[in-house]
Image (cartoon, rainbow, N blue to C red; front, side, top):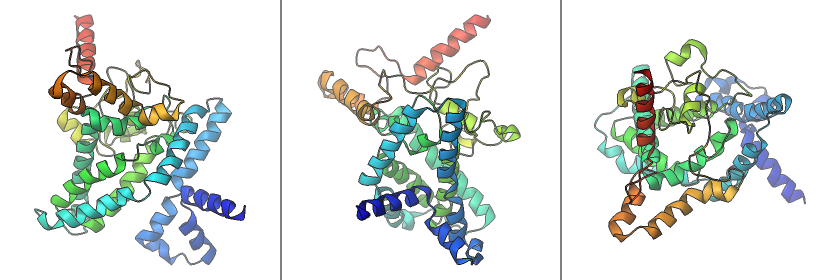
Length: 333
């Protein structure tokens, strides 16, 4: 019994990330707060604490979104068991493999850091775009889009193979374009922390636009748009913090006051069922491949965008959004 309680205690401490911060507070020696590790130790507990606060506010507002929290908690526990070290191993492997092929060498200065962050966002854009445009990768990413409400726990809703797939692309891009490993890990921490924050829901932050920042960076409002299944919002806002690549590639979309966000994915599913949320898209792909005539069509189902059909009755996000915009244009004329 004591061993079980000890395991639960370690998991709670691990979830909140307060072990290092607690040691600093107990020692009374705050000199480590002037170091990167000390700063990270104090920042890491912020998002888990906000998740609990957001849940409590949901109970107060009588909008607890318990189904979403339940499924995302199960996903968090499942991923802790099966994928604790896979992603970081992928990062280290990519660094070792590609660092010698870097086209430039950077130093840890403020201007190279800006360069590094722009490069990181480019790698993030590539991984995220492919996660929506290639059916196989959508199977890895769809778990994150399945929740039908938005809150901070959604940042934990990922298929266990998505992190190594994402980090393989982001790390490779950064290393080949000269981002040093030390700078890369700092960027990953900042981006991971902000990437969790932008999932904050209306219980925690009613207006996610963040004032004037909405014009400068991607805010929770932009990311709520990204998680929407409304035709106007589908497959937009792929970046995490800097909106530069979305604007360059034409995937930037503001939240519209007259179009309330509908969260979730377009496939009919049971968002309260762990197996459907986690494996549903893989099962759907397997069925389409099994039914498809010929090897070519089977392969196309795997690599074409979600919604592609061998019958020609395509319902891809690009086509749905284009049809919506065309209808809106016709209404104005």
